[in-house]
Length: 171
Ligand code: AMP
Image 1: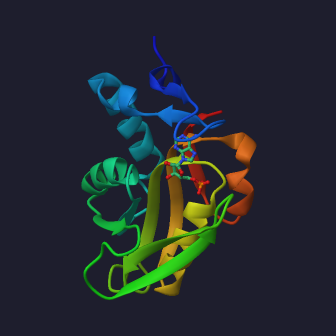
Image 2 (image 1 turned 90 degrees about the vertical axis):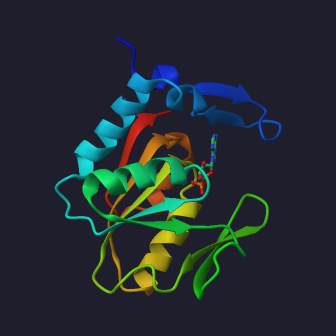
């Protein structure tokens, strides 16, 4: 039987030289692999009484809304700067070269909300950490972070050691 990992395509030197891009479109287009991934992500968090699932632009927008629906929770988008129309909170974080910023609506999370953060992949953990900070600024509780893929050699988990971090496919 095929495993989830068998559906991930490695694309060398994308988007730049030296990066091996983990392409999930080969998993998404296969109905059985997609169900398997969603079912496994759901199984790990279904007892957590989650109020909101946060998806990180862009590929987090694929998994988070499906999980929201299954968990009977709300969906909250975290976006790149300048995309959200109402009042926002923002958080900047370090990249290998330079910094990046993410934004979220100020009224997206209520004090005491139990929040799940979902994305396709965790690399250095910088993106996920920035989202945790925003949720906590608004008084939300990050009950878990879920990723389809974890690049363990980049040690993102160390940056998030106080959180419940779940991943299905590890490299
Ligand atoms: P990081 O903040 O370093 O954990 O980076 C995580 C974000 O970058 C995720 O939203 C991923 O989609 C993207 N990303 C980083 N490295 C890769 C990779 N090798 N293949 C695909 N996406 C990646």
